[in-house]
Image 1: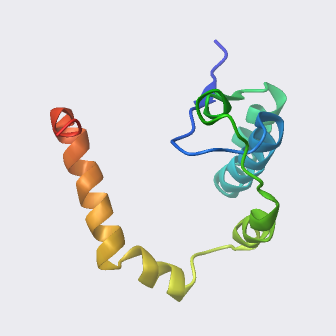
Image 2: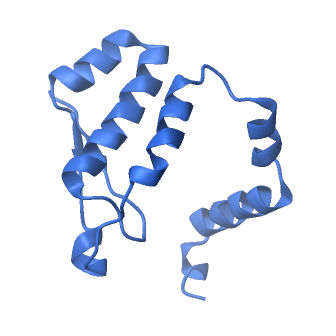
Image 3: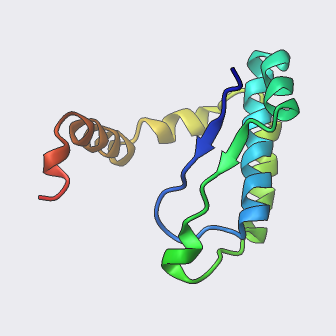
Length: 113
């Protein structure tokens, strides 16, 4: 049985779907290959990664990703999180966001409130 990864982006405008899936695939393959080159090859060989591109239908615009390409390159080149990344991930703002998402996952009826 062939497995698929279906990526459904969150809110806000996204790049043109053709560019967006290429950016996403690049990051996914980079991350997966660090754990298993075989799994990364299977994802590529089977075209197992698909994008559900709905954002343009809703927002009627595409996001220009070109200013972010350098950051994407930087993240893909990193082999591990730097100290500043770890410090940022533990800030009160990020910790509070994580907690809010966890609460929302446990009590979805709160989302409408």
